[in-house]
Length: 254
Image (cartoon, rainbow, N blue to C red; front, side, top):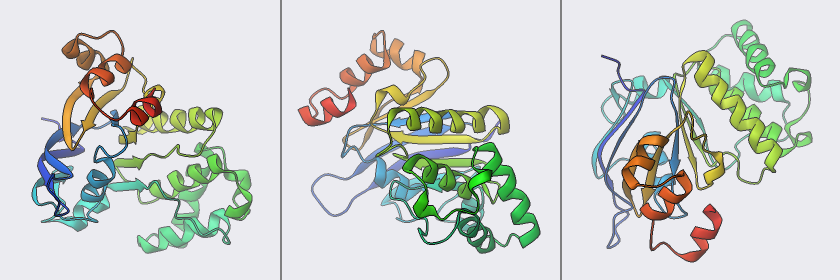
């Protein structure tokens, strides 16, 4: 039996208000799958990512990464995990290579092996020729690719990306999505891609988890979710599953 790359079970988290940020959230991401965590602003996506990366401790429930519980065995869980957060975290005054070498050193990767991995990942992401440039000189799309390369240096088998295309133009978004899909197809890496943009989902190949007001409304392959809702497209399914959300969120997701 294949162990899920990510298994979320009965997850609940409260910041102390009347309504919990997450309530009884559960889903799986299997190896090699590109899964979109789809939800309007305020759905709980960022809270879920904070729990999945160990930045927050759940009020109840579990997060397992390749069978390793994030609370009970965080070291083993995090060793399998690569993360690209919504807010950029690169040092603008260091070069691409310097940023990546620093991260590799934090994971105990020696200089020679780090340089080999850096060349591999930057070549894969069409950035090797810019390895000597400072991050400040790169555009937003290229900076995101550097962050993906950085997240791959310790050889994770699960990638979490939180709204990674925020601020990018349409061509840069498409290029980034294509690179990440290739990681799934070529290396068998599992991906959880948080977004509120319907057009970032490939209905032919992707899985989707629809999160709304802290609860999972549907999960599975796009075709299965559409069949469950009786809709022809994922956009129609999303509208039906999140009916009643604020108009501003509906416009942003359209």
